[in-house]
Amino acid sequence: MSSDDRLTRFLARAEQLLERIEKILPPATPQTDWSAPAYRWRSDHANGWLEAIHDPQVLSLDDLLCMDSQKAAVIRNTERFLSGHSANNVLLWGSRGTGKSSLVKGLLPACKERGLRLIEVDKDELLRLPAIMREIADRPERFILFSDDLSFEASEPGYKPLKAALEGSLSGLPENVLIYATSNRRHLLPEYFSENRETTVVDGEIHLGDAVEEKISLSERFGLWISFYPFSQDDYLAIVEHWLQQNGQEMNEETRLQALQWATQRGSRSGRVARQFAIDLASR
Image 1 (cartoon, rainbow, N blue to C red):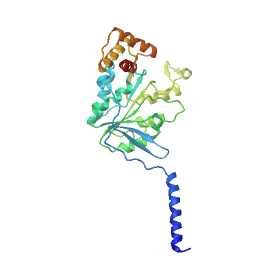
Image 2 (image 1 turned 120 degrees about the horizontal axis):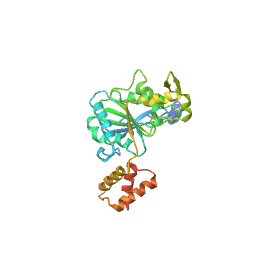
Image 3 (image 1 turned 90 degrees about the vertical axis):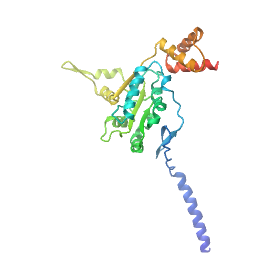
């Protein structure tokens, strides 16, 4: 066999080997598109990256009714953040369907021209918080890390890096980052009746058990708590009327009764249920 033949065979085998190696190597991390107003953190077993969302599906703040005090508190805190002043991390907690996540997302159309960017972080990705913050720490934009419908079981590890990021580590959050989270649980972790038995009274003072203290310590690291409660019937009907008007319809006695029946069937008078009714009525 000539030297040329041996070289050809060697190169062919080397190419085959490289193809096999490429199949097992992790893909290259995508470059972040910083022109988007919103992002979602994605990761595989090796890398994490910000997936750009150029057309996020959000509601206008004007479409969020019957939550004036909650809206004012979130806007005031966000305005301070965008102005470069100190601001609080925010926990929005309470009844389902009352507009908690819609309020956070609604900040985007109102504030994106001032540099606000929203990064959606799933609960399972909270372990990657240090990597996320390294990615955005030196950017000129102002970022809200948003975790929706957040709650943990006691055995889940994700709440520990969240505690550290909020107020538990020496580095803390970068100056251009806040964390906003929504939850149906005020303390984010399940609370059991049996844990109350750990409470003791010493010299007339109540001392909570270790399990309760651990759970409270997580939610307490959010500087601003905003509570959401079920809507009254009048509030629910006002929201229904708003969405009917958005669809070119009017509220009358018949649609009022249909809206109440819809809420009864769903077992909830919430803003979400009100909008779903208006959409269904428009389709009919």
